[in-house]
Image (cartoon, rainbow over all chains, first blue to last red; front, side, top):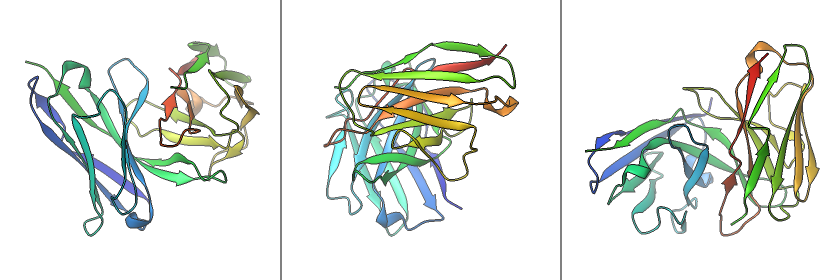
Length: 122
Length: 109
């Protein structure tokens, strides 16, 4: 069974930093692109970042670019999101998601974790 | 950025009835469109990809249609477990600039 388990959320002051983690199991982690998606309170889903299978390529949403770094450790089956210069608007539940290629060669999210809550507040 | 617009924002339907949810893209996304179901405190669940292909384990009462800019998710006979928020998402761009609709909340009438 595929499992994605996020951790590392909590309360952080504006301007602070935090690293989120996602532990993957039940599939060959190194074979899949992975993403982070977030949901601010009362809002919809927002894609945050994506990383290639070997970690050689990363993509970011404009709202976080320059403040966030996605990374992975295939030996540990883990995905990470380093968040710096945090703002109140980064407050959200952060989900890790597995990217799956469809016939077009582009990717949708076929597996999701249950999320970890990050609150940015003084 | 491709903007996804869902309607209605809230849909109230009685169990056993049909629900029709709409999603419109600001430009063509072909059939690179997915639908997700999301319940509070749970992981989002993939329902449909490729605009019309049901994901593994998704009941046949869920169906998707459309291409280009206009898409529909239909739930043919609502069950109690179907009341949730539904999101559409385009995955047409590369490099990835995935965008979601704002969601349709499906309420029990």
